Image (cartoon, rainbow, N blue to C red):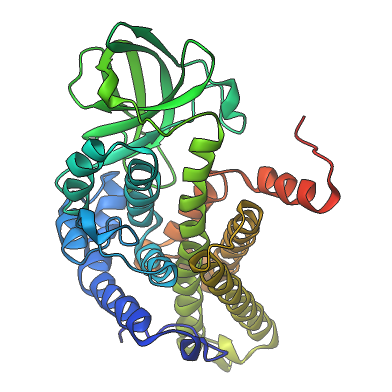
Length: 389
């Protein structure tokens, strides 16, 4: 039976017709095109590139960006619901769209020259070019200001040296947005194209998590790029952090999709699985688990919906986004664990998808700012005291 959603408080009433229409369209597509193929890709450790063109055709890449550049121009709720449904399929698919849309297309739109926008955004919206975001380094994750990647000015060129690690879309990207310190120690963004001399895109393998996502290491050895490849609007650490806010917002929604998938499977299984004298759904402990899962999903939905409305009003702060990412991923991970418990030994099988979501969420819990870092961001906001330094 097709997935019907999880909506205990009738929150569909709070959505505009076009928002529901977009969600339902992506939901059907995930059912028909993603779920039948995602397990073989996950098992093989490959990203389903065959899904890029259909996603582009539905307007999912850069969905909330300006139609002037070939994007759909959707509002923040619609964009969030897209992320929700994609992650219900697999975190790797949502990660691809988050990076493409929020971490590469958005900064080009926000910080790029008109020439850069016209060159890259339409192609990326059509899925003809794939991007990746090079901020994290082997020794600098939670402290990106410590990066050692350098961009040295030489006449009309920049020479880039350094390395980036844990880069989603890293080996399939046609263009990498590399963050580096210039001669004045100011962090700036640079567009480095695949095939540029000295630029190496190495695949990260042997992962337990996000196996259907492309993860890479980027190495830059005397990479020469023209001045025109620098994003002119990027100045300092706030530039990449603002990009991360776009991705974190999408993650807050995406985690709901993973939680929905796990809850729905656990509920169906509990109704069908008979032990002793009745389906296990008829036992008190299982009912308690299902009730707690549903309650947390509902709270996650309310939080994400409020974040989306604030975003469309231009009133959403990075601290509020941190709360959304922190809360929703944490509870999605716990829901996946409890759902696995309900299925018992069957919970680890591919056919039930729960363990796949569980493994993926372990990474989502860490990337785009760890759970602990988001805790300290919120803590500083409410106390006025930074615990980070």
